[in-house]
Image 1: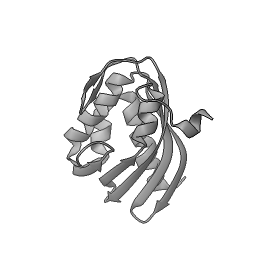
Image 2: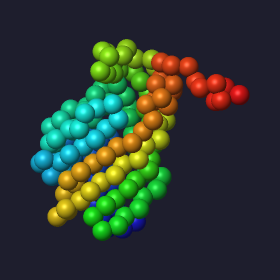
Image 3: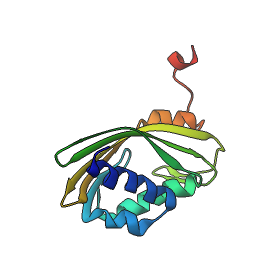
Length: 146
């Protein structure tokens, strides 16, 4: 794994799992731009941490695994899985979703743009349909049922 990958991806995932918001803030530019599915663009570290805390509340046992990572110039792209059990309330644009008790193993991709050792842009991609289906909040697509 390249030096930039280690300092960004593994630190980011470790800070998330450890709920170490000071470490998360230290590795990001104060005016970091974050784009997440289902959310308007977030500007700054505080909105990013607030968004992240929504998932920690809903999935207190959450962890992230890194499956693959590529690095080039000032860009790091990581594929992984968000894994946890929905045992807490999940804040959503439609209101609070009560705990379902369902296990979640959600594939995602992180894209980090880095300048002077700090993340300046962070984009996260995951499939909301897969997310909702795994939580039992919508039926599986017909093709998945066989």
